[in-house]
Image 1 (spheres, rainbow, N blue to C red):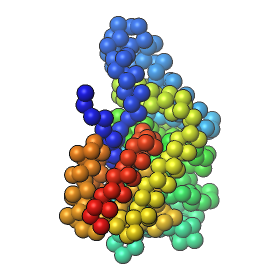
Image 2 (image 1 turned 135 degrees about the horizontal axis):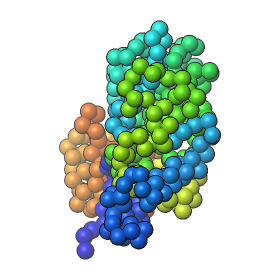
Image 3 (image 1 turned 120 degrees about the vertical axis):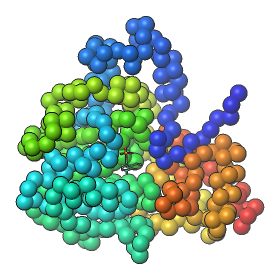
Length: 363
Ligand SMILES: Cc1ncc(COP(=O)(O)O)c(C=O)c1O
């Protein structure tokens, strides 16, 4: 039997084991139809049921209000970097961007191709994205078309724990790496987008939750496929959707519901964070988290060891023990444990125990 792996990959990330087992069991014969779900027409009854259940489960779990639509689109979060300003940054307008890492910088670059932008705040401290700006530090434009934030910074390991108050300006957020980690008040957002491959399912599906009235008033001067309104009007069935990916997302959402919903997820995620940051802070300085304490991410825990050589050894030894994906992003180095919903409390305990042992041997 192969060794059970604890997957700390940043994305695509691990999926809950029971979800993979269910997909495996249904793979050749979906719902007694004699064929796989991915062989069904996206206009047929068997797939449609999956599709609308995935949307309904998202609404139920996140408490999405009737003012907002849940969409499944393609092109990843990267395409949303472009389609958000294409839809909502109209001529003569300017959009605010809060820059807290690599991904918000990319979102800003795309918006600059479309229209005017302003940087409303930054998480940069002497060249390192180690904080989340406080409300008092933001320079918000009261007339902005919208204000864009990245709720969790997958590479830097920072997370917004209180979303900014942007007044009457629509808040747009990239939740790619922390959607569904806990309940949020969706009514506060004009638009949320998230690539599925961390907390929702496999790559290839992007979830968008958008204010319907705002989408209806968006630009008509862009290709039909890029208009959020098109996907609202067609229930995300305008083009052939990534049916297998949406099916997998539906199984993940089913599993989330069965395991206590988002309150259950939050409880587990806080416990995992407590264990892992505890292992860092309790190591007598062997492990150091470069991020300001109140900005620490509960999804991507970044830490450094006393030397790069020790970091390399740490990654190698952890892999031998079946814990994979602990190397930090190549742009920042160090180590990173991505502890999305599918990583269990037991998996995190295993890592914390190993960290303690490694520090004792090499400290
Ligand atoms: C916060 C965040 N935004 C955007 C992206 C880019 O997502 P995609 O590859 O789906 O375009 C990532 C990828 O890791 C991410 O972590």
